[in-house]
Length: 302
Ligand SMILES: Nc1nc2c(ncn2[C@@H]2O[C@H](COP(=O)(O)OP(=O)(O)OP(=O)(O)O)[C@@H](O)[C@H]2O)c(=O)[nH]1
Image (tube, rainbow, N blue to C red):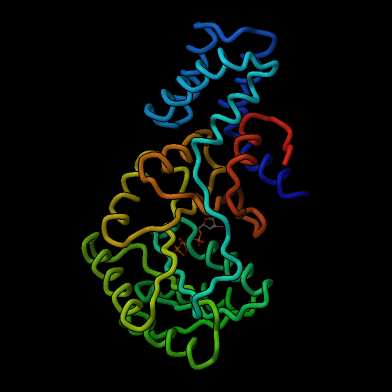
């Protein structure tokens, strides 16, 4: 199965529940008030966020008048795409080591994301070191070690319960002495309380800043099924560490695929990757056009 087919399959729940209905709604009709009202309802239900829905509708109305398109669905597609911000995969970063700091609550898909990213860099011929800095959970250390072995990345780990910042310090030292071009830092998603967690993340960040010119990327991994709660959670992370990109996972498990727009808009952070299933290839680099095509059931025209 090709990447787009995987994406389409992963987004079938949200397409079948909400977005797919737009095609039928538009078929052979003029975009009059009634059609636009129904469209508005679909978009709101998809968790897109009111502000984005209004912006998309305004753009659609004015462009529809101007362009009189044969296929308004493609016009809507283009407008939706312009409301999503993405940032490509930095395959050949100039900084060495290039440091990717990964944060997010437990269970959001951090480990899967780290494994996938490491694999991608390894396939680009880069050497990868992973800091097992979620020392709060013994299982997390084991899980990341297991992945490291599987994909050929070195994992630097200390004992369960040890100082996370010290693990990061050692990983940076290792990367510099062994010529590892990419360092990925796994972190805890839950400590005794939220402020404790945020303090730990800040401490790790200070270590990275002191030892290198990084972090070069700070990725927040967000479970797409948590909807608006996830967006609130993201704000807390954003306030503590500067998030440079979001990874939205488990989009296959939600009917509300509009959440990607909401995240983009409310947080003002580009989406880097999305997860649409549990298999390795189901975590994809985020491409707004393919995403919207898959939502609307439009063929991918590149
Ligand atoms: N359906 C689906 N499941 C996913 C996706 N991404 C991750 N998962 C699953 O979600 C669960 C949690 O993923 P992990 O990568 O272990 O998450 P984590 O944030 O590292 O969690 P901890 O190990 O608990 O800290 C696993 O069972 C994954 O297989 C996705 O895009 N879709």
